[in-house]
Image (tube, rainbow over all chains, first blue to last red; front, side, top):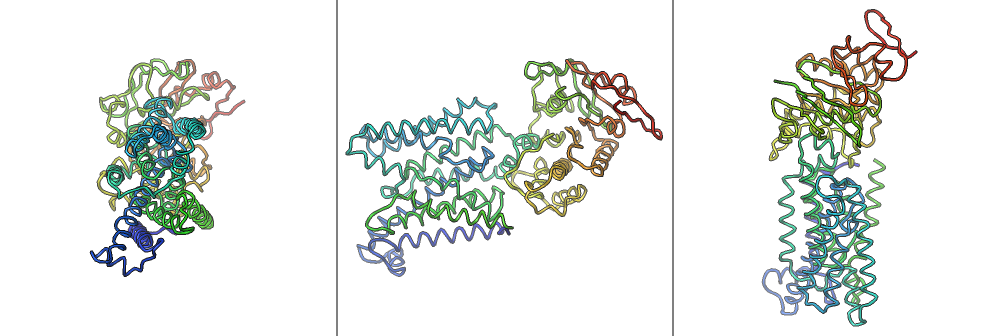
Length: 326
Length: 254
């Protein structure tokens, strides 16, 4: 399969993001025309249109974009770290820890802020457990890390089932929906967008060492890459990204697995392209998926995680077969 | 002092003593064969020389400083290690993977220069990989992968080359050209040490031999001193006969 030049691919992905944003602003229970949206963005328009676009659709689309970017970047990083294309934020149990934290906070009747704080705490505890149980700095191998994460994720899953079983009926529906991934409550991105930008800026200069790490850990070491430090940084960064995504939108799986693959198939493996490309592609995918989720069966809203799978699975299979036929 | 200075090096692995009190100077311009039976510690020794494996005691010095204390990139400009078994990459292409060899020389803020790229092409051509340069490295055969690993090492341009079974997977033509290349690099002033299983290749291409005899014992010296049928028969636990064919020594299993 022919690769696209890096600049062209990034431009295309940025264009796709803009198109997804446009669709998100236009579509909804009150359909607007492109001209009406442009009027609102230009500072005019009717009050109803202003509320629809500026207070409902734009913040939600922006939150979707940030969540998609967070998950895709986390996936790309974990795939290098484990040198395993099956790695995903969810495989390592980070999101499980976050979910348990959030559910405990909901059960305790916490406010939105404390739910987010508890989720972040749960994700960090999960990270620490994997690092600790995985053998400590310097001696853990990706396989061991992956296994530890998988076992931990299973443990979190059991706790989640327990919490759902004992939860009172009144909170059950909110808890379930939150776990399936839901952007309806998400506001304009603030600190979560900051986390995404910061991690991307910190890791972009390490793009070449990441390339070497992806090609082989031992050889990267002999070529002068500070492998252990880089792996630790990548793991902490991926955990932070995942926790941030989970506290923004709940459990949206699949983005972290499929998006980096798609970018690799289209543009190759260089992380200079893969990291920003994954952010753009993940963002665009989740904006599109969320728009579909709230319009496809309107007024019923679907969990966005279902839609990402519906969009992502066929796309990924198609890319994979094209890659294999080359 | 250039090359590698090994002092009192003792290596243990999984409770077994592999090397005890190794004192050796691997001088520039010499080509060493590292011989020993399976599990005798050849790979572990090479990893310890590269600073990747911590010895139980003793030290390895590079330009007067212990190898483990060199900053990664500085060390990588001086010491290169060819692994016995390559790791599976995530699907990079041959040319990209070879270019990784330039990493210690390339500024973190800039990409490869034209000069870097020329070196990559040169090494790929030398290893007869140019036609495969745009293929994913995972599609290569075992011998082609080995040649890619060697090309990457050549692109790295280290002064000390630690080679763990460089002839692995290679056909006869490539075994000969690759080992001759390493011998010539040694003659041009680099330091070369290669773990080998073929005694005849060792006798043909290496001027010095380090023989790991088991249980920590070792012996070293010029190849005509160390490579003796009686000693080799004892170490490799199979009777060998030494022949001379047109001035070249050969060892045949009886």
